[in-house]
Length: 144
Image (cartoon, rainbow, N blue to C red; front, side, top):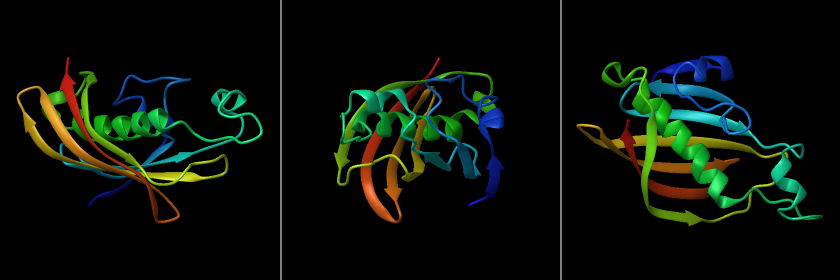
């Protein structure tokens, strides 16, 4: 694993996501075309907490999976053959949620690409908070 320190500006040079849909704050490890580790700082100021849920804020699982997908997209799109392209969700084979994520938590997002063939990539993903798994998923991407 290669240690890196990519902030939001550097991340936006790899993936097309922008506020309010850029859901990763920093990339800490990156092996282009193989794996990436990112961080997301969850804050009470996120609009989603106004309705999910009032007086009991919980980050929706769909946004955790999207954060993992963006981490996988960084790994995929940093490979030389995919630079400048866009990675789209091709599918979610599995997704399991083990623990709620709340404001103040920092998500550690890790994605290992398990297969790349032509313009399709597959990966295994895991989100943790303080070393405890919150979500694991198998994701598929396609390059457009």
